[in-house]
Length: 176
Image (cartoon, rainbow, N blue to C red; front, side):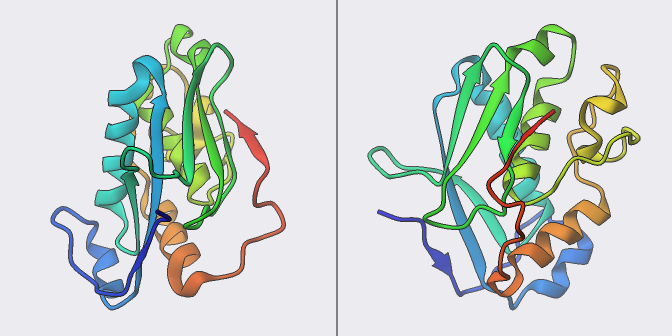
């Protein structure tokens, strides 16, 4: 079964205050599979929950058994990377949860949240401060902030509002 788009809007407890203005927008649901996520399953779930609490017009949900997922999460030994979205229902995206960054000391939940930021259409913003989720590794290993800032939340809201056409960069793999 493909992911669905819900046209009924609902306020989600804990969402960012500025997102309340988008209550009447359709909610786009994209699915992910963590079947190949290895030891990162819990971190991925936490990263997804952060995004779901931060934006209102897109939901990321774990695909049901046997359901085709829009996003595959794969554990590997390389550097973390992801397909640049915005990934839509029926689309294809991949998050690689690279052990190299974890072994270097980077926070695994920040990595998961950052890589799902790419899936949602956000590019890297390097160099950048720890307050910017999409600054990624440039914020240093001491940065553990897994939350998108207001600019990042707003950009995702706009990318999923009204099913805007994707940019020419959609589908590229971003490392970091």
